[in-house]
Length: 221
Length: 145
Image (cartoon, rainbow over all chains, first blue to last red; front, side):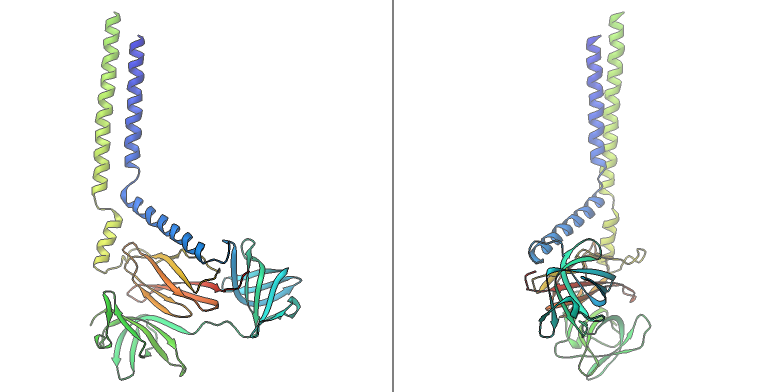
């Protein structure tokens, strides 16, 4: 009887081991594994990048760019692209007015001033300000444009593009620095013809025209 | 009588072991079949080779690089994921970039920064002109905080 019990236990052990082995093998299909791998690689790469780039130690250092909505005691209420942010100004914080970078105190910050606030994140939408730059003029990015469209005509100076989204035609002036490419590699200006579909980027130039910076042919006529 | 009991137990144990082996072989077969059959990601890459985006999937754009970062280097690596077969356009303060994401829709680009505030627009385009857009704010300073 003792022998039988030992044999039975052995058999059960075999069942459990075989089952767990089979389950372990079948629970990770290759597709999921690949996606997880990609995500993990991305995360690792991001961590590496952030570690190299951030100032000092500081996963917590953040910067808000916006406009002053209010000044309440030692706190600046800033409106940025995502909404309202509070920037607490401590005694060790530096506030400078641009241009000139003259040191000022919080009383000299005016409502509607434009601001770059840098400091330690104190949770969502709140910053312990360490360095604040204020200016009467906005820190506006240069005007740029991108889109997909069909080249309707080409003259000596510009392409006429009919956007795919149905907007008005865009005149894109080409310059010496305009680059031409396709998904296979770089192209020459001569490779672009009327009827081609292109993805383009452009910047507003001094004459208020759009200067093409990159023209990528995505479909040949 | 005792010998009969032992025979019965031995038969039961034998049956159990047999069942385990058969079950194990069947499970292993199924697992091998599922690995060798084409997975969803494999079909995506076939589509990509033909430059046809999977229009049945909704266009999306996930940016891995954090927003509102303060950096002390004049470039930043923008990393993200979008629908395979699309085009990614990055409009930075100092330059413009057009990228073709990888077969799984992953992209990364070193973007030049200007001193101070940088607004970086990232768009993912389908060939029909529709797009999704994300905007990052990055501050570049060499001043010690």
